[in-house]
Length: 540
Image (tube, rainbow, N blue to C red; front, top):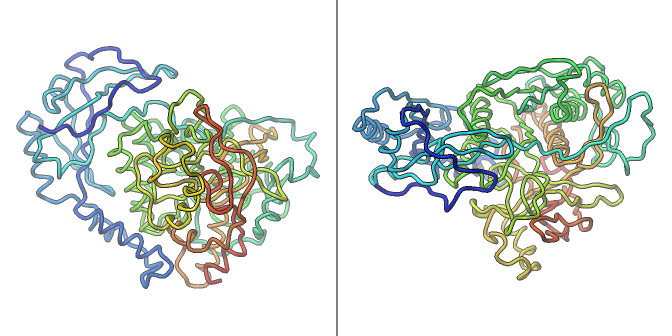
């Protein structure tokens, strides 16, 4: 046997309660290694690097699967091992990757994985689940098995909605002439980033907006938002709804979710005329936030024609997951990027302390999935003339993922200028995030019939996603491929950004955090985008 994954101790905010009853059934999911993961990564960059002769020739589901399938030998070897322990009711699930699923009582799982499963409680939420701090597999299966869930990932907390605070006033008393320096509206963003108000023209062009943790998007709030802040649009313009894992989207003020309303109002109301789909993710998945994140991207991946852009305003701490589990999710993002989907996430709101503010940490905590190299992470700014960095914009360097080559030239000068500052508090060779930034302070929405002002990179994500969708619309109309995985394009066209060189540092972990500087920095990335310059860089 060989130790496959382990933790040094019980994570913060968790307590070990003791062993569960030996006959307690646990549903396991074994993720098998892909036959050619590195081949898929090469294919992703081939279709995403603007100078590549294959740029824009995105892969089909079948072409991606030719890289991500498990080998027949892996399937047979793992099934044989399970059978040796009397586990024969094993199902093969084939999505992006291949999984073997089965149920086993705790006593059998302890023998199978040479471990001791315990019941753990997430103290803030009271949620309980069976986990372990270490498990092993036969040494000759190490090359066949990527990760096993649930084992050492402590992802019981709800995914963090990236919005951190809001104030409100009644719609009737709203001042339509508020300065954009104080309140951000669609009109402010159109002026600031040169975003057009003219409607998109291509019906095949779509944005997907996932919703989690019982945040529901309201049709009535969107209609009120459009009447008030986009009077040039038909107020009955709306979004479609799809559901996975038992998701729903109930209507009424008592069901209004400011996160879901923010995401739909700043896609429908900013990407004028682009079809927006709200995807409600319900509670019916294997325990742990990681599986919900996998389910949404695997759902999109399995579509014949997936939405060309996904904007997601949820995240969590990288340390919730083990490196293998984080890699598994990140590799699904890689597969979706290869299919031509732009994946855009708010970077988080905890500064250098991760997805949410934490002043007790003793080293910087990267947010996930910001550290995944196959997504675009969007930090936050506030103010205008000039725009400034916000103190909550999460940014830093992944502890799990190495820095990708596309950002090496941009990140190296920042690290050189930083010198020994914060030495040992972060992984200086890790993937740097965010990639870019956009407005994230006092963004006006309507929720539950009231005008609300949102702070957080939940705002900046859908703002940039809308800009990408509008560029895609022009590309489709011109018979050209959509942008797909964005980062090689962004880092090869830094002229499309306004560099943010001043503002507040992203404090956390008892430190002042990083500062906005000339060039890329881990608080505003490359800067804030300009739509007209994006069009020019895309050859339009």
